[in-house]
Length: 373
Ligand SMILES: C[C@@](O)(CCOP(=O)(O)O)CC(=O)O
Image 1 (tube, protein in one colour):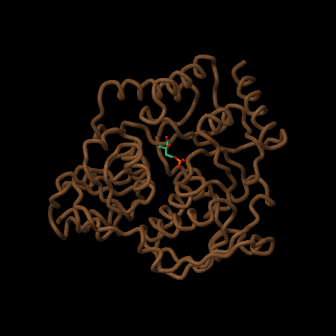
Image 2: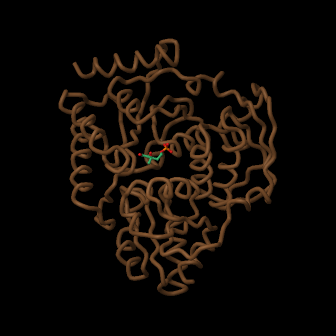
Image 3: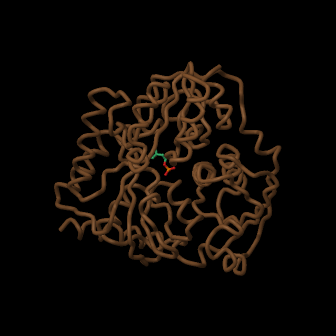
């Protein structure tokens, strides 16, 4: 019955957006599962679906929640209760409740397989760095798609829809996480829509890859870029490219995103969730420099959190709080701060909008300095 409901809704949407065509998916990733972003009506929607017997038919993961899995972030009773109801409804439907914005860490997403994902940074990551195919499905559609087993066949599920249309030449780099985010954001702002083909993009490592993907899709509707020499099948994409526009991004443009005008009361890394290397870098620095004056918060995936083991406890002694399952974008805990220094341009975009809290975008090293300032 409820599977039928999901199928009918997805088919109706497909009538409107893809001439009725749908595509079967291997996995799904649902966003909008934090009580902060969906509120009471969102909870009721999920509970209604779960109570009607709806169950996902493909492996489905969920985005960060309002509360972290070990209680590092404090939230009030209403949020805690609301989040509990969301978790219960998701579990009843068979959704994995790891609450991670980097499901690509443990879902392999092979080249040219189809996925119904809803979190833009993760979609951009798998499209760009794996050539696995997902469009940006709104949170409820990704869930209904997970239940139905298919989603509308929108352009990014076709080779034609992935044809590069804008040539981007990057004359800056190698780019660390903040600069990689700045290039992604500038591309997003300047192009708006279309498929970029990026030449000259040199990223320093995994943290930079994550920030590039996250910023591109936060500052635009784009969730795919072909990176020359990096994206699998990039040569094929170059062959079919139809460039109608060309833009250049220089070191000077990147500097636009750097500001040092305010002293933060906290430093935040991990939007998208930090990889092991990034966490180990922070821990090595604080061990060298001693306990920072201001706390450092790091959100990471349940997988990385588990791997860190006893380091999580040790970090607390250095005023470093590592947590998982939530982040400072979707947790109301963020409102306890006045100004947050971060190397994430996605956090820089959302934190003032969702929480009215100030942000200082800084390079990773500078953010750390600010913790001691
Ligand atoms: C806060 C949130 O809406 C951030 C925006 O996500 P996205 O970059 O539009 O996928 C995510 C969520 O609610 O799960």
